Length: 450
Ligand SMILES: *Cc1c(COP(=O)(O)O)cnc(C)c1O
Image (cartoon, rainbow, N blue to C red):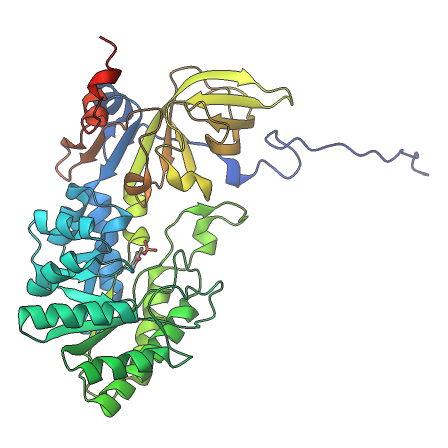
């Protein structure tokens, strides 16, 4: 029998509705009712919204997972906790308890580590800006100072003279590891011979003893191979330094930069697919060590991994305050947390979970923060079911670079709590009020209004 002619038609597939391809798993919304067993409702009732919540259990778990990936492959491993990634005392204290020393990049961070009880000898002092006053203190306390430029060599020689002793130092290197744009602004360049010149200069001065090499190739590096190149170049350079200048390189510090399971904007694949596992990084790095180190030589391997340890250990609970319809038809929500709290919203697309089951069809929605600023967008477009006022959204991972780069702008900063391993909840940073903000202001008498 002849089939009846059927006119071809094109039907637009509405994303979010069921269609012949099914609904995209990328957009499946998850419900989260608790963090480590503490109900979201209870957290918000007791500590308010928005609320940052750190999981002690997850933090320790991530640290151990990454540390063990290296310690199980190489006998001499030390982690330095990158303060600028998250320097809340409680977070640093957990990581110090786990065995990390401190890695700081300013006088302020140096003081923070000392205040927490970390001795100078357990502080790695990086960064391009170290005024002489803090160099003096750090050198006197035996910190591991990583020199960034020739002027710092001169400053440190003066400090050595003043202290009347030689100072042990390391230099920071920058190099081509295939990662572009290359981070060439920190340290001495390897390929141009600048790094060798720095060693020559240190040797000639006679006041400093070079005992380490440092490098940090970038952040959110998705290429384990880049670290293999870095390690190969550092080990070769270490032997050059030892053979030609007679310094003993006791440690090789390869910096941080491992990615977390966060989704960069503009990437399509989920982080579970895109982000290499820590074992892949560790394998490449230790392979490169073993193929380049001389037999029996095990210099200390230092890692300063920040983001990969802390990012997934923290959540932000935010509450839907209102909803509206934009002129282009999109749904929009106003939440009580914005880019003032989520600095990383500029390049991350966060995982968003809802505190309850919601009926209704998903539709594309944008989530704004509370700021009266056009740029205050914490999610540019996700498929969300209709959310009532008062619904809580849980954003993650938010542990890296938010509690340090957040800003007091228009709104106060909220409470940060830690859910402890024993199930209790501790406030680790109290929410701000007007007295915090105005404490440092001075109103001249002639301007007083009352
Ligand atoms: C920021 C920084 C780190 C930590 O980087 P992550 O990408 O968070 O791992 C480590 N070392 C130095 C020198 C840094 O500046």
